[in-house]
Image (cartoon, rainbow, N blue to C red; front, side, top):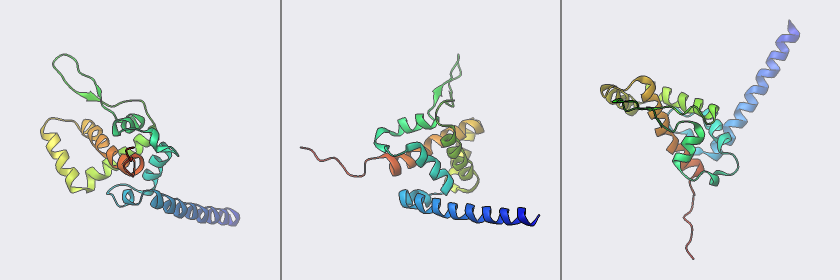
Length: 154
């Protein structure tokens, strides 16, 4: 039992050290994201992993949304006009956006007002969450993918 307890303590210390290092790296790469409501180290890290070493390949917010699997897809039939979630894309990034959306629905005043407004319009919680995930994507695009300096014209 002592050996198992010592092993657990050693692993716990190692996890803490890796967590601190990850937080340092993410804060260095995306400092303003870390101060945004509902975005934690792990969710920002998921998005950094998705974007990778070549963020210039993602040309627009819509492209990032498609890569994350949060672009809306028409699912209308007859008189009903609605959109549904894209089932493609990176599932881990989609889950990170979901966690941010749920956190904001619970704690963020502006998001709570948005949810009340959309509920009054007849939207379901699932549809509202889809919309919120799509509205979160531009924050990541601006911070991680958008060109930092305007190109000079020759």
